[in-house]
Length: 194
Image (cartoon, rainbow, N blue to C red):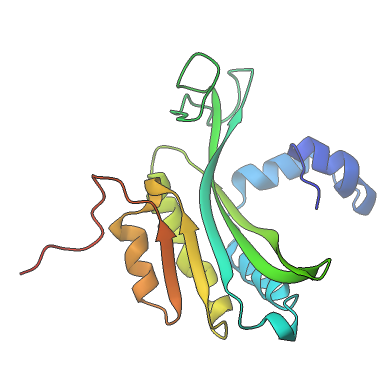
């Protein structure tokens, strides 16, 4: 699978071949569309789950949650900010750009007589300081969970930034769901005993 570096790249290499719409129309749609993207996530998840061969149906499916930083060199981009980047190696812990929270599904397939996992992106939301990244993730996860109703073993993977009650309680709402993550010292996952 090949990734697109930007909407412009996606337009240049794919979208322009299948539509007469301009690049500006796609920028506008991405910025101002009020579409319900949960349907796209559910259809994508359903298609990805159909890729699992019968011999691997007992293997776990991994549902990954993470955030990614996209650096921008200009300052006149919509919703550009200076988010903290704990992995920055540029002399500053702050990056000029955008931060996206992403969901990815990893399904087992056979590759060279071995089990390999195919990573399928399900959804992205741009962080805009109105909600925390944790709140964005916690809002996206329930939208796609109906696709996993027949799946026996779904493991949610995330880093320590998402190991909080908002996300951990979602795991308890669905059967056959587990959570694997690092827990920070300040993580509150459960209420105190009465």
